[in-house]
Amino acid sequence: MPQPHALIAGAGIGGLTAALCLARQGWRVSLFEQAPVLEEVGAGLQLSPNASSILRTIGVLPHLAKAALQPRGLILRRARDASALLTLPLLDAESRWGAPYLVAHRADLQRALLETLAAHKDISLMLGMEVAGFATHGRGIRLVVKQGAVKRTFEGDCLIGADGVHSFTRARLLAAAGLPPAQPTGRRQRIAWRALVPAEKVSADLLLPRTNLWLGADTHLVHYPLRQGKVVNVVAVVETASAASAKEPFWAGSGDPAVLSRRFSNWAKPAQDLLAAAPQWRTHPLVAFPPLPFWSAARVTLLGDAAHPMLPFLAQGAAQAIEDAAALASALRKPGNIEAAFQAYQSVRLARASRVQAASHKQASLYHLKGPAAFARDMVMRFTAPEQALARYDWLYQPQNYPQDHLT
Image (tube, rainbow, N blue to C red; front, top):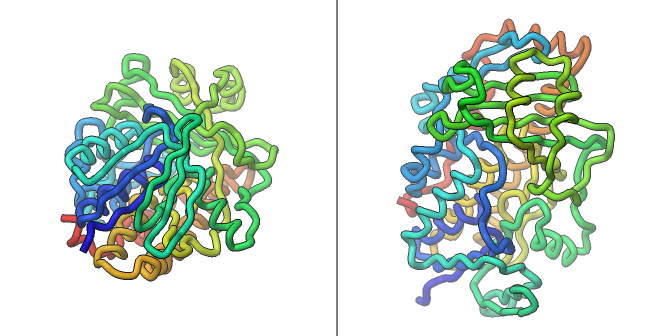
């Protein structure tokens, strides 16, 4: 039997993980990425046990070890006075959920995936290749990509659309089904401001191995040290009255520190000092879509943000893409009907990813409360036992039962 060949549109976290998972079970994989280089962009990621368990199985964690951090806990703070509302211990994540809870920068995880991928001769990564079209035929799928002004054609057994929030693959699948393009949810726009602050510019308290989450009115702030304490990853999210848009530049925005300073002017001094220490700010819009009616059609399927763009308020965007990759590889682990395998993958993943999307949207409202509602939230957090709070995340952090024996 000839070696099966998967075509993957997009070399982000989901696409790279899917390539690794498939290659470890004998697939040949061709990855097509429209960016001419894989730049070190993005923000910090929280790799909860449902994701780290998969990364460990496919051999990525050793490559990530020096750049990642295992936080001792998560501290939720009130914005106006920095008081701790709730502390969640995370060092026992291994014993509770079977895998570590880690934080890492997206660029460091991407580098670790690429280093792992380099050991697999059956994976080809092609940069500067923009997907321009595809069509299913009796023997497989034909993919057309543009490289500058030149178009090239590739043949494979299936196509996996891991091409992000602005997915070309998703748009084509919906159009073929006679459905309109997916539209972002929400009447308000949320913008994430991100920065890496050098360790020498912050107080020693901010270099402790823990994650800090501050809650304010229409704003919140997350920060934690990375890269062996050399930098502090900072993400500030601000909400505006303008409608959500999927057309803003995703990673390339540049933020004016004066604008951010005004939005956080009534916050506690430690938070203001941290924001002021940032050498530069990058911005990107937070975009979420309602759950799609389907992910797969014939020999084409979706993965990661192409399938389920979600708000980051549960820190599950990357984690759910990694889960997708493992579930997809599980569905394709035996030679046979690819269309049936894609439908099986969809049936396993669509409901869970949709639940995470909904929970992330609900969490967004909780974080950004103001007035009496915020006071009530803070009181509830103060009187919530850490064990009780952790139990609420068991459904999310428990590694899923996607058979992974083929990945070892």
